[in-house]
Image 1 (cartoon, helix red, strand yellow):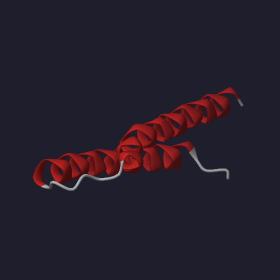
Image 2 (tube, rainbow, N blue to C red; image 1 turned 120 degrees about the horizontal axis):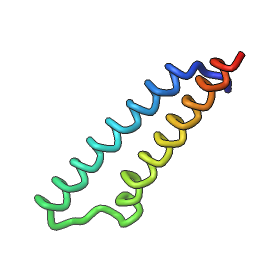
Image 3 (cartoon, rainbow, N blue to C red; image 1 turned 30 degrees about the horizontal axis):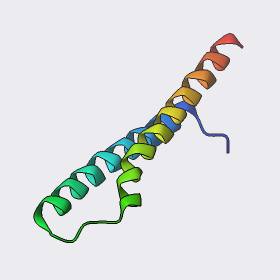
Length: 69
């Protein structure tokens, strides 16, 4: 999948926004309800920013590679 660096940055930003909103949902849900979400749901806001960081680093490498040509 060869995407432009700008596209990778946009995808990373969208993933970060989704992660923040999901974290807010998890906090609000656990705070207001006695029923707790499964434990694996708590891992999603941890792994989504890692994926976003990977995409941003990949975009920077591609930009550096394009500047060398």
